[in-house]
Image (tube, rainbow, N blue to C red; front, side, top):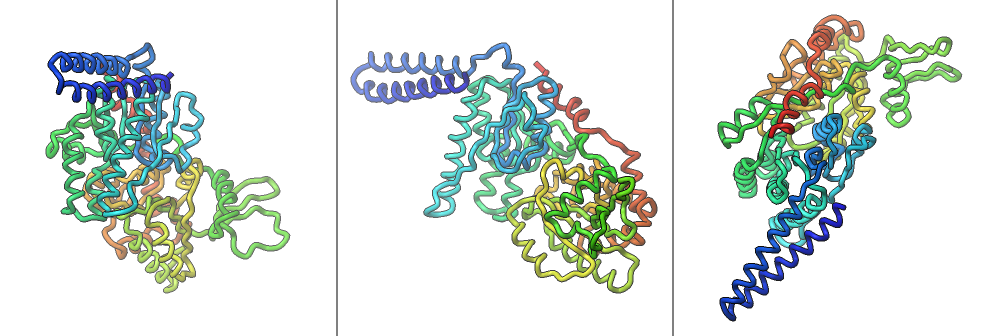
Length: 494
């Protein structure tokens, strides 16, 4: 039905174009033809608008969730889609294919994923020509995809990236009578400034674009109160703060589930395998756990290494040399006789700088610290977070106004965190209460030393144990309740 409607729409657009061209030619003849061409064009435009805005009984129960990025690596937008589905909305989820989305999204009958291609511009000539042609091609593709869908009551779009999706979405919403919601995760121009510099013409253009067209939305969401104030004070955009909250899948992992995950990971990741395994031993063992063959009970091994985890998208706003230097210092502490455990550091994620840092990691020669950089399936990631002993976050916001979602997920698993300082981080990480905030590698290595002293005996004692108990006690609101409170009223408002 949507495809047929799109074909009719394209045919009508073609007729309008033909009428305009014919009118331009015929107006050189006499006034009668001018009147005829204007009338024909007006009729066709009216017909087009009628087709585009034609609604049915289900229109108000349809929402499009749009991200001009990898759907599988857009957890917040996946959570939006699941929340909409839980409230009976049919969701059209538009974005780039690539990473597998969470199984709950794939298996939801109310969620239809429509993949779009990440297009490239002309690969010849100046770089600016390539960028401009990419924007034009991406705009046309996105316009056609959105017009092919049934009329939606709302389109909920992630920003960044907002170029060209803000203008295209606003245009489609105007043509179809849909309401336009922008979810501000950050500012696109500040991310571009990391690689081009803040004074680059394309960065200035991107800032002007976001500021101007960001005002055209019906509603706005943002991730911090600091961003809410910045949008209001500097761009005159009113927004509702929707903090990232962990869904129910993020929780502490039982010892049995830890063992199952570690056994799976040990098949491909040597850092999870037990060292010096004895021939003929029938006991299931990993570097951290073992299963007793007599009663199948699972226990954590007494001399196990500490499991440190960091999650990243490997971009310019995360300097992993800080963590690598801190791990080098930690290695020195152990060699000097400090009462510290060996360390397995797992850095998960995909991104443009991964190969660069993997080469740096390969040059390190540690005896007591092991580093691996796996990509985890969406279902395994929360289980690993719930199995770890300490999290590290190196996300340093390009705008200083967004919060690292990875820390939100870690806190959902009651996992204490060491996080690098930036403006507004205090809205999430409470220093000396649920984690520690550091400014450089020296400060981080000192924190690792103090938190892991006498591990694993310190698990329920000292700072590490106190932080974990505080996280358990605070509980905190989960995504569903937070979404129902802040987003659902926007959808149901007249």
